[in-house]
Length: 578
Image 1: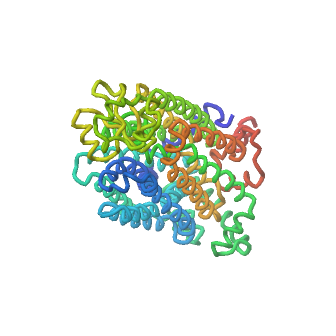
Image 2: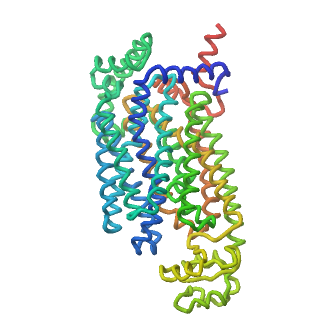
Image 3: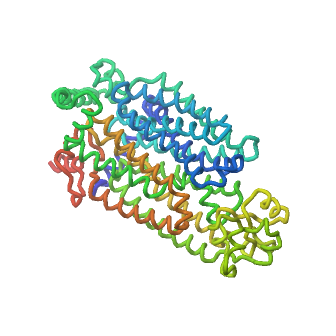
């Protein structure tokens, strides 16, 4: 088994707990760098709630689905650029300097968003914030992994994943806090600058990555840092491993070259790097195509699709899903060095597929049982207030709430109850106010449904299925799987792949919902998740507990998906039997 004997797993967990508690320096380093994950998570979560209020301030945003998608996804576009340059920055400027640069750009982006007088300025702010997030998304786990003892490296890198989910949870709390405050969404987006300032100050007090320093010929500085991180009897072994890696790099330097193009060519011509990219890019793309960021970016909107009209209620329920994401990240920290990276991702994907198929059924049932349109009630609002598509329809008796919403109109629920026949009206502020004056509920994103709560419950289970495996593990995997000399460029390629997949998903989600319905969209994601499950099974090896140099040897040798053993565990078993 990949996890090894139960005794060994308990020893690994005890080692993590012992080192983490006995060495405040290690935890301080991991937590400070991990704030980059918090920035990532906050930006992912905050836009979901802010979008509800941005639509109220800017009429053009409310009327144009593509503009909503652009506002959400331009942060992802900026992240693609940041991640692409992040690989070069990590190799050239160092991990610490890259994190400091990301903080500055993120802070500037938060200020621009907070004062945006028009949607186009808001888009510029989103691009700046995304640029900072893109750099941080690959640099923070890389910095932590290179400054962590191998025995607890996976758990410490998971701190970055935990802070991503904490950032998302924090964003929903902030969203709720400002729902009644003038300038709602401006405060929601502007507060994002504070964690960037905190991380900038903390990182000024921390050292550069010891592995990067050693690679730059600064052995004494590297040794001093390693002495704070490793046990006294482990320092020489780590120095030796780094020395061997650097010597090998120097031998290959003439072949690799110095420019980005030369490094890219050398990376793809190296069998270990190529196989590492197969695994790393597959995990990162699969992470996005399970649909997770549609939940993070549009969580309140999805809750409204389930038939819950109140913005504050939608935000509160989104807070619950975000809290479950944090719980899942804690489970990942406890399990990743016990069960391994590969197994956690495979189990996670199976559970994700089950949840997505269940969501498909729930939303399909909600759509087919939507309340019908009451013709008399609708016409009582007057011709100017009635949905024009409804007035021109040849057979209005077949209309229900869902058909009304697909015609880009809104449903004004009956005074007798949300599930009774109601009116199909034009979606304007004036008509909405008239509906509200009659103490009726206005539905513009989803129809009232008796099983809406069930959709929210399954959404929570989906988060729990995603977070411990596909949430944290792809980032951990990509911080470990590339040889030192290619770690920056390899991590950059994988991060760009992640953000490109993220951009595709976030830029098309609302359009997919409009074209396929919620049920069809979640069914599509279930199909993508199944493809991801097969790809990860075939391409991702288990590297639990391996030194970076051992990972490179494993990749050079090749990976057999039918062989579920781990070379490190095999070695330990052999030494025990001898």
